[in-house]
Image 1 (tube, rainbow, N blue to C red):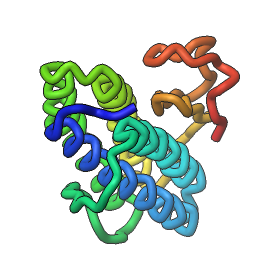
Image 2 (cartoon, one colour):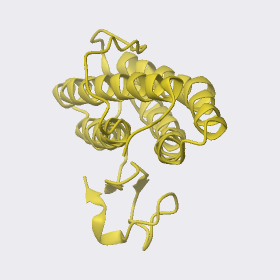
Image 3 (tube, rainbow, N blue to C red):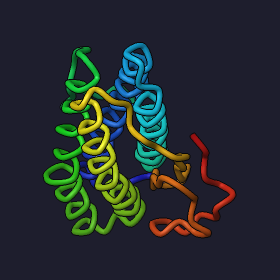
Length: 184
């Protein structure tokens, strides 16, 4: 599979870069949370890191046969702080994706009739909305000096849909079966 429009291809590369950096940043911040005695927040970071990997994987695959070197502009939060600060960085990044980046990328893909890219952007947008809320809940606990009260976290490997508690029988975003969800 490959995209036909240069703008959508650029957006896919940018989204891939951003999601790849989020994946690694969340793994690092998860380790920080663990060291600060917040293992559940660490687990949440690792679960959402997996969702970010799924998004990066989707974006990368949509580029298909487009090979070559590309400079990839992607905004990112850098630095390691205390868990409360790292969660603010995560919230800010996810809000940027939900409020600015993915709505624009999604509309461009629709306009350019790039169905596969449209699907990849839609999947990411829907998951990022959930991530904002989960990170906000975790930050509230961290502000109170506590770990997050967190059940099992399940992540759909197809679209990154993230849910606490029980995995749905069928992913509400992409339709993947419950058995496919990764348990954290």
